[in-house]
Length: 308
Ligand code: CP
Image (tube, rainbow, N blue to C red; front, top):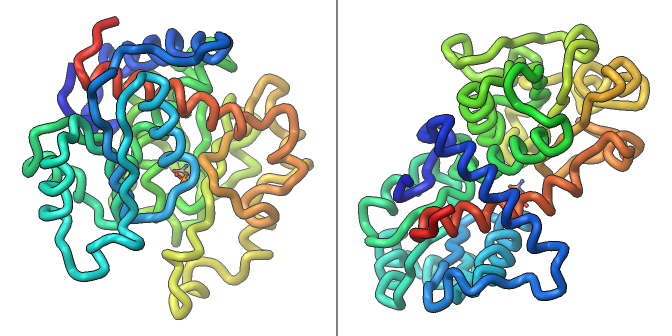
């Protein structure tokens, strides 16, 4: 088993499949009255979050607690980071308190790699800048496999702000490894330079892509990264963006009957997805969150030395 989980691109098919299979075993715990395993008793997991999060931070916390680990939640807001303390000094301080694993979210792409050079424990990337979010890709793959029974050969459309999306990068890497076919759908301004070298297809036409898709994964328009002066150069208006790239009930009807709708959250309802679609039975958005706990339990269990 790998020591750190820094990027979905680092996972080979056998390691990724083992993580998904172990997540399946962890999911069976959710149906029990007592949802805890003693596996990580005496181990300490630090959630080191320099960027806001709802789903990832809380699900890592629930996952670690269900495995009986001690959990330290560190948020840069309200810490000595505001006094200028560096990532390295913060990490070494937390290590001195006995961290066995550090789950890090940071706005700088590559921060988890630096951390892995500085500390002795396992490092899990919980989202770094626009680079990667590997546990999101694992929980997305787990959700697809649970709903559709397989990953190999699935047609997965990932739609929207690919340029700023670490979720898209991680999903392209992992789904390619596991045999799915990914098409990135976005306006040309929201596709990264060099996307032609990624192991996926690209399209500017959502309506043409929908009828062949088994999975349609909508991405959040990352308003905070489309800084004020630049915004107009990515697309003319949010209304125009929704008209071309938003998923509404009419577009849902163009998808095959078995196809599912995914979104990593947080959503901009009314921009990339309508409330009607987000809340429809074909949406797996809430299921993705529940699966995130099982997947993160599997990741912590396997990295911290469990066997399955
Ligand atoms: N999907 C995701 O990473 O959500 P949070 O930012 O709430 O963690």
